Length: 251
Image (cartoon, rainbow, N blue to C red):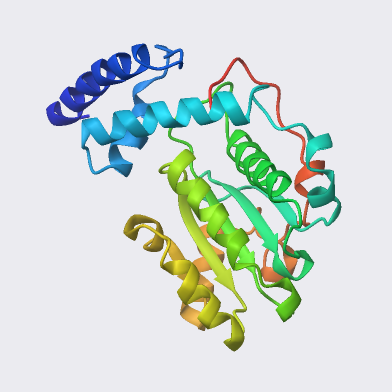
């Protein structure tokens, strides 16, 4: 870490304390530098913006995830579709989450859907912890659009997912791969893309040719890549993936 980063972190800690003392948020002082650095990077090292984002995140966690996690009983409808899979770690040690879009239908219960987004992001990130969270863990997402129909299209759901990543999980996304995109989904993706920050959009790869497919397979690795994509792994529904026991950790 260079001197400028150390100064930015020190300034951010002061700003967070000041902001926290003027709100109903209890500012926790045990967040490590890697956690704070994610917020600084997300806001281009602007300490004021990063501090406000961090405090907003704390308020959101306190209000939306009071237990520290989303119980599966609160997202049963979404889990029963078995559309999200958790595949272990990629070649670089990032957890791999797969979305089977042909099993998804727009939710009639937006509150439950938002809880589901939190559940799947929390569990995916937690699957990479070794003992406890460091704070800079990232994930790889795979959205498989094979065999989707118009009934599966959910621009609102995609936008919500990206908004959560950008607002509440800054710098958690390492890469997002879109597979088997049909022609009628191109206009949907153009709409969704308008809601993506530049840094997020740069992490999205639409796999359309053999070179991109080879890079995708190499990035994930055979051990985590499902058999249907050329790897050796079986698809594991996210609710069936067992997390290792952890020490106290902070999302």
